Image (spheres, rainbow, N blue to C red):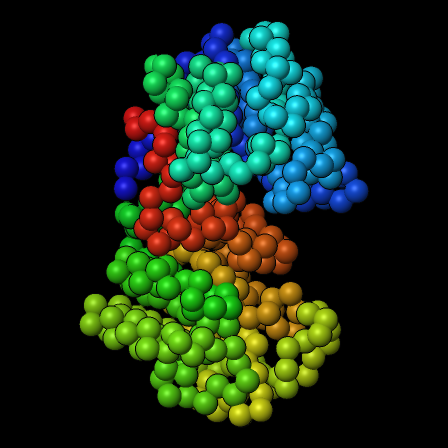
Length: 410
């Protein structure tokens, strides 16, 4: 996994047109951005390229765009938010074709240090490059607008889309640099290197609902880490694999054999695999999710047949916190229970607190664990919180990501 990639610090963009693939997939409500974290995250790279005298052309997707171009998924609000954060004019090209005449003209009129934002890349239809001709044509048209390409969209780095993995080929063919931005660089340094080259002891914590979603992650991390901790809904499939009664708890019956294999694999490799020793149970899932709920705590092998496990218990929380204490690197992906409910968030909070209290490098692997850490107020205590959900999972699986692979090596 070549992870030593050219970054914006290694290239000279003075007087050149630089296409930057950002992740501006922000939540919108009535045309207003409700969380601008992704825009904030993109600013350092954009400011660096402006300062160096590049002509900065920004592109991104937003939303799923199921029914073609529409005002609700336009990047117009993003242009306004960028203007405010950068303190300078951002020219928004409202062109549903994305790379049409309007875009060509806007780029031709740019001076060094100017910023242009193209319309939602998904307005162009399917963005996949392989094997569609349309995707390849789109990638070439994007490349025609620029001399240099910078990818800073980690959240999309696991997809071989035209604007992520297609453009670099064409830019490279005409002698242009393909680099990563500061956000991508940070993801590669923390997530990529945590898995490939961790400072030990290396503890991995996996939670979330389904074993099926994390098959390859579990398999890869058992090979890489010293201790693997399992919590969340997927822990009950492991407990069932141990022969325990798990009542109405979430279970992946087809994956019981797999869980047995993984426990054997860990044992043979001399790795610790920690499972809940007690669990917080209730008569059923809270409805709505944050509704008050009556819970009891029982040992993990004493779950009654008519009850459902919804969070790890306090003994487990203490066991997991203790395992983190001596760690030098900790990666965490997936909550320990139904963290959206105050009564069932205790396990997730305990793990977050343990990570906040340690001197280890602490890496939160995107998705629900990132949401939990942000929501519960622990964000500033973590070394790195990944901006990608699917992308961070694939990194933890040890996969090569198209968006990372497409950048030039140093």
